[in-house]
Length: 193
Image (cartoon, rainbow, N blue to C red; front, side, top):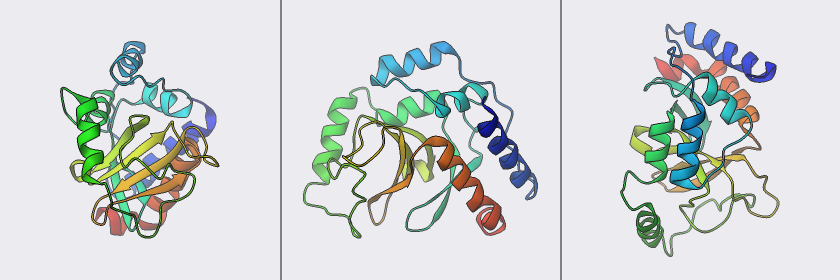
């Protein structure tokens, strides 16, 4: 793990311990886990998210990230298995699931409008890799590998249900993690107590 990522990981543990929580000590993801992601999803993960997965393969239900959508939402870090299942809509036929999910959103527009760095359509994109979520997917955090013009490959976006919207969060995983820690540091008591 690079020094910036390690610094933020240590900072997260300090913040969590201040409210009597911790990032459970799980093993990191292995090379075969990343091969399985590629085989199941067609996505080749790289960068800081991979380094983070190598250090911890999920948070086992513990809420360790915060995203700011239309509200502050604490999220768990999905294990590789959970992320693959979430990416495939927990279905044996992900292609059909994506088609069906996108059909449900025909004619629905987001208010306020979606950030221009995120593709305006579809609502669900196979090139978005989920790595965090809350409440069974009512909030999902994605690594966006298919940004709009002006967006950045590997930017972080989030889906929030009710009202349904997709939000731009950060230009990359490290920026997201730093921003998440900033929110946790300021609001941990109200988010976790």
